[in-house]
Image 1 (tube, rainbow, N blue to C red):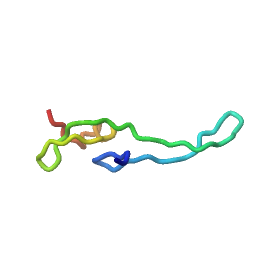
Image 2 (tube, rainbow, N blue to C red):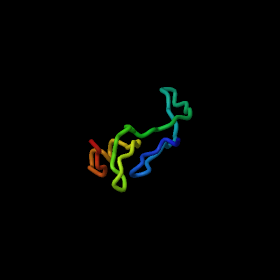
Image 3 (cartoon, rainbow, N blue to C red):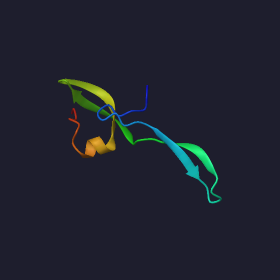
Length: 63
């Protein structure tokens, strides 16, 4: 499974981590995903959702 938000599609991006000596090495920037029970098309499903979607109420939580 890909590391993506089910609502907005936010996924991993890449870049460099830069040390004190200014040496660059590759790294991943990953979104903060949470596994939630949400309602999609009237059905309860368990999906990975990023915290920015949870905070902005883009997700209808299933209880």
